Amino acid sequence: MKKVQPIRDERIIDGMKHYFRIRSLRNYLFFCIGIYSGLRVSDLCMLRVEEVRGSHVSLTEKKNKHAKRFIIHPSIREDLDRYISGMSDGDYLFASRQRKKVSRIKYQPIDRTTAYRFLNEAAREFGLKEIGCHTLRKTWAYRLYMQDPKNLALLMDMFGHSDPRETLDYIGLTQDMMDKAIMSLR
Figure 1 (tube, rainbow, N blue to C red):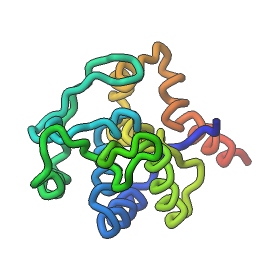
Figure 2: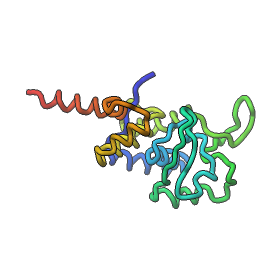
Figure 3: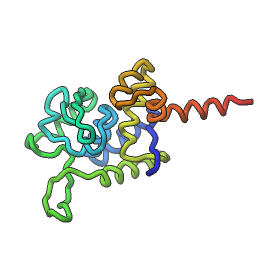
Figure 4: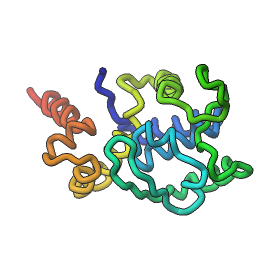
């Protein structure tokens, strides 16, 4: 499996938000909740409408069964409310528009391959490489760290890392530091 990178440039993040917003409100909200929450794609896909009606989302992460609580970023609240108006609490927030091939059931959650596809289509538009489903989670962490490096302890806790180097490598900063060091050589 290839190693994916965070989106490091805020201008590209803003451009991708615009790209998604004019094409699909569902994909726009998926992208935004991903970069504002640090959720894994598997947890994003399984969100239900009732979980996003308040100011915070509380859930149990699928992979490690950890309880997670995060605030819904105010910049997406209006779009989120418009998107979920008319939806039932039990509906999947990011439902597929197609019937599932095997079960033939409609309105099931999108799967990670769908998310991967629309994220990579946008990434190509912006000339990004090494993008995948984990990019949203890494982008969230990268932005938190760059905003304030003191957030490293928080990120280590969120990811269950015991060594700061593991977290820095995970969010792509080890590579950034290596590139910078090499470029400063005479």
